[in-house]
Length: 240
Image (cartoon, rainbow, N blue to C red; front, top):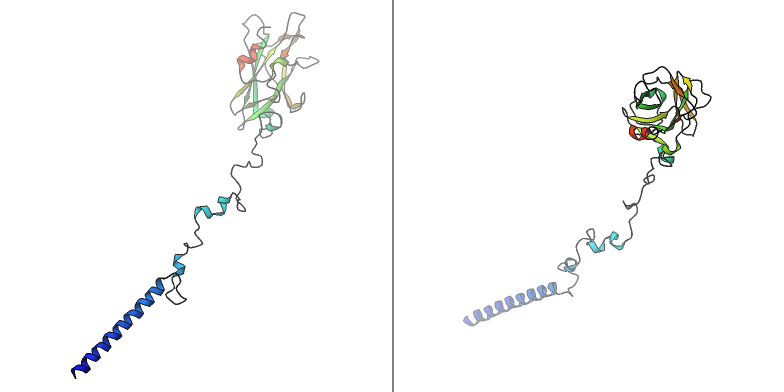
């Protein structure tokens, strides 16, 4: 009886030992890199993380080949080269229309000595910036020709115009006569130039003389180009 019981216990212990051994073997097989294809095979966990999140070194841009549609921001866009203030780059600013400017005259001459030097002031009375070309076309009285330009007063080549913001002014200086016979003039008309040299824009505008009804002119008469500084314009004629 006692022997049977001892034998039975040894058999139970043997069964327990055998089961533990099998469990250990299975765990060892699951942890081994050479594990089988069973449900405990964990090899995918040893691979890199999701292919959808590659590291920086693996990104397509790292090889220097841009992806389609990746236009470098440093490349200039069409028209980005810009245009200058003269030549072909002045098309964005309209010419001053005769009805959008006012022209007045003044003089630096002392009273009683006659008027020989006239400063013309053109004011932009419109609402937009505009430009005037070269020099004013001036006719004195019944003169057969217009007053010629002072070529030395011409601005930088390629920029034959003066740009005027609303309410701002530009100036041209007029010398009437020199030491020779003079002819009287009771009227003066001023006309703006179009883009082409010598071409006329709009109708001539009658401008009153500064403080007198009559001036005297001769072949010494000449006029400066339009410029933004009145003192600079007068400098070309006050020494004459």
